[in-house]
Length: 337
Image (cartoon, rainbow, N blue to C red; front, side):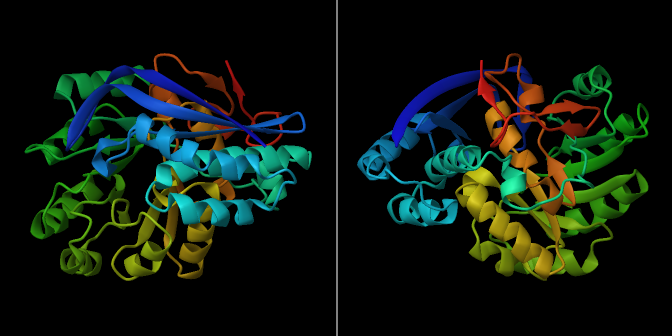
């Protein structure tokens, strides 16, 4: 099996701001794995919050290149993930890019789309939201009106969070979801939940710091809105940790090491009767298209990353008015431009 690494800098349409940072450019890494004429593509973005750069991903992947090249006969994706996990346990983002590429490659060799290989039936897929980052109120309204959408995810973490939602609500009847990115405290979350519910908010994502478990427990028992874990749910063992502390989990492929582990996390959450969600990290259509194959396992999805770019580097799933349409291609269904 052969390996190629392609770093890119993805330019965003608008400056994207959450409670802890702003950026206009999203560095990302595309991984290509090839075997016997088949090529699989994977992706992982850099992320300063988790201490991951494109260079660190490339350096760690090059360390396992001999192991990858030694695989002449394809093994099951689960075995590939386990094999590389031993070497890349410190860099799940790098593992994610490789895992997506391998799942793409493997399902292509079977002549199947990835969800077909998994025996999933996409007949009741959720719609994706569209994210509005923190900005001046006028600009947040402008961004929303620029993209009429059935569901908006609103980034919060300011002194005027409720005011923002009240003003946005004047311009649309769409469903709102709120992501505070760890910026609130217990009483603030409980109080905000009451106001947000009256404003048509569906749930609150990660209102408090990831390791504030006593706070999460209190909010879980008192909030009038569902609370979805994000930063508190990074890898597989975190799902059980979040049980009875959150109403659901938002699984990010880069944080858990790719599609193989994400699928297991979602299946575990469903057995615990927790709400299931997958989120994105402003990837290109490579990463976004891989998420689409998990849709039959989800209650909610946030896969608008490629829609936030001024120019994509790939073609894959199409998204119109929140509805996701699969590519006709096999595997995860992408091609690089």
